[in-house]
Length: 189
Image 1 (tube, rainbow, N blue to C red):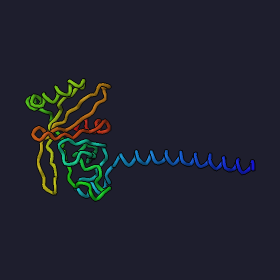
Image 2: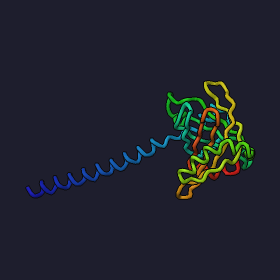
Image 3: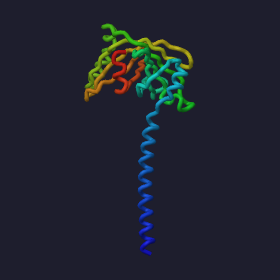
């Protein structure tokens, strides 16, 4: 009888340990599925840009898709363009095939900086240091049709002095917000 009780307790301990391990594995799987990364080969085929290198997550405002992902096309150590696609591209049939292509920029003029000053002031109210850096020609390919845009690159710091960047477009209020991982690769872009 004692052996049966000890055996039952041992089986319960093993089962409990197994359930804990299963929950830990499940938590990691959920974390990885939430961080969707598009298939690079599919993005290269759709955008006709290659080779593409991952930059990181992008949040879109006033864009068709809000959960985006950025790549850069680098040749001979120089970034030739930045491509931003649906974060689910190549992972599901419901992903949008629309994408942004951003060309290298030129320094923003004093007039351009002044026109964006209200946005910069709004960011500074939130204790963030923001500065318009450059002007970029961009194309938004939507349903196979290209739409030309002018985007402005803005660097900003949060209250912890972490540096970030985003691209904005003045007329439609399009904003492509890159995260810290995307900052250093595009600092001179």
